[in-house]
Amino acid sequence: MAVENLQRDWYVVYSNPHKEEQAQFHLALKGMKSFFPKLYIPSAESRGRICPLFPNYLFVRLHMETECHRIVWTPGVKRIVSFGAEPIPIDESVIQILQQQADEKGIIRAQSKLTCGQEVEISGGPFDGLMGIIQAPPDNRGRVKILLKLLSRQISIKFGVEFIKGGRTAWAPVGCG
Image (cartoon, rainbow, N blue to C red; front, side):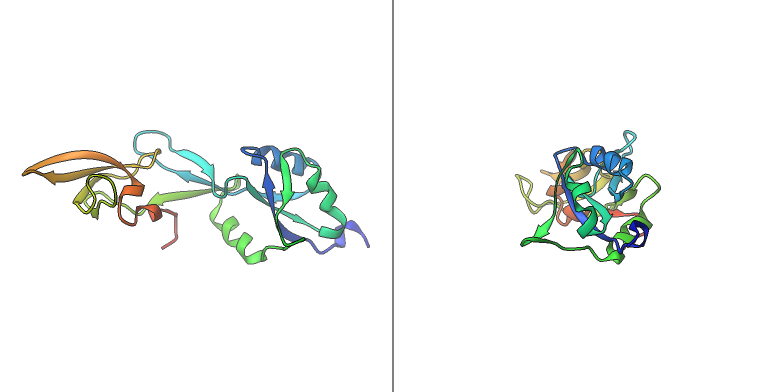
């Protein structure tokens, strides 16, 4: 059977820490198709930041029986993710959804669901349960400027989004609900 006619599926590859791009580069040199989705988190105060959507993981399209060895001996790759003893292919539609949201470099733009003027509840820490109003959306370090009313005074404090009730879901890809 010709190599071009093989049925290739998407698999998840676990990389060495912070070596996803190295693995992707070397996979491309071997002619392997891979996808490493990254998330761009904008910031009002700087250029924003790009971070892996799934740290230490990337997707590779391969024919498991004949091309597996090409993956496991690639610099930056630790192993193909398996459940039990068998690597399980990822449904093509999952990869398509991610690729549709990404640009040509694999970057998916995120936007904050938290908006200026929105009333939020503080969750955790010494201000647990207090209500405040967002003055500035999250910065590239995930900190939100909130106006709180304390002791008949209004004060402005920066909190990590993890201290905003529902804040862990503060970022969403552009175009998603």
